[in-house]
Length: 246
Ligand SMILES: O=C(O)CCC(=O)C(=O)O
Image 1: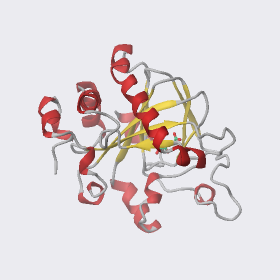
Image 2: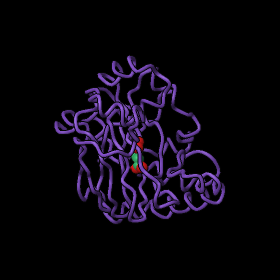
Image 3: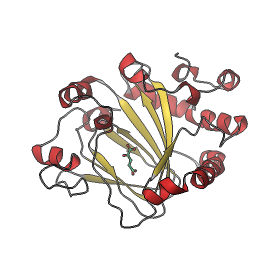
């Protein structure tokens, strides 16, 4: 996974078979329908993702087990070992969809900018810390725009202004170094959450993101134990090492 370490992302086309996707698709749709029912007001206000599919009441044990079986499959485990310096841990899951209002603008960001860390600490943290999204689109989607190499490199002055809405810039302004990665059903996009990136809305997108991170106290504090597999589910998984760490 040289390309990942150098650029902060890797797109693996046709990584998943139809059979593998069909095994989780209904479960994702079911979670989404229940989430939408309970979060109509949030959706109305512009929310475009949900999270924590493996905790709470929207899915039953059997459905959660199917998601964990998918997440812990060997071919993902191999990628995780290749990408992270040491064995990572499972952080959470998310679903990404379009905002209700088709005119809603997207926003450049680094995930770390929402942690409350100082900018100086963020600059240091991205040198060594790793939080990685595995994006699994259920439909063809316009994808993600990202700025290669910014998983380890800090912003240009303009990029910093845009993603922080400073000096009259808006977080949706075009950035010169942006690279759009379009995705099809079956593809897997791996990208570092450290990077400057933004979602591109459209095509009724519906993407399942699985997030992994370093097994270090600074990031581990963001893990919600409720999202981890129950002892019974854990017992059935092949690659327990990503889940059995608390
Ligand atoms: O797809 C999106 O809307 C944004 C994705 C994103 O920012 C993320 O996964 O951290």
